[in-house]
Length: 239
Image (spheres, rainbow, N blue to C red):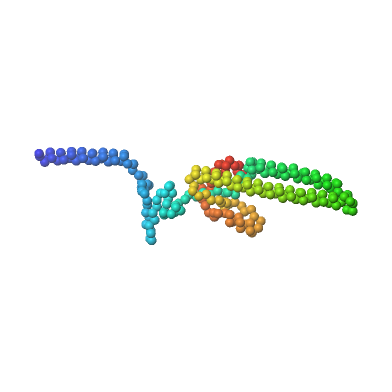
């Protein structure tokens, strides 16, 4: 075979080999998606070197873990204006109806006491202290006031108990709704907070200091505030 023919044959073979290589590369490219320039991985862990020790970052149940301890994870945080939510809940119609029923019962009893007091006043206001029936009248009046005092104590206890029960009930409803909102937004930890912009409601240094203490955050991104979404979840009317 002459030199010219050999060159032509070798060139053809080289071209075929190159085409076969490119076709194989195309098949591999279609089988395994190429990561975008901003992707890193996939990888089981990322090791960050440090001066004294290395830090290993891993994905543990959807959380960025930086240690073996259960708490060594990055948690997403949200916050709720619990004071506002509690007040809105306690002002809602169903809570107010419970209090109104007790208040109406107390009002009816109070009117009965007022009527009885008027009757006693009319009966004994002109009785002479030396009259035979004075002592009996005095005991009747004293018994009446003891009855009134006992009733007022009883109604105060009932009202206090109802208020305590409503506060706990409102708290349970708030936490249940918080669970729903947190799950929906993939938030791990939800804290109570008072917005730094909320005006103080205090008339003494002690009250003002308390207003400072209940403000958990001094600076925070507005995006962590879940209060508006919680108000919607509870179907409350914002003031």
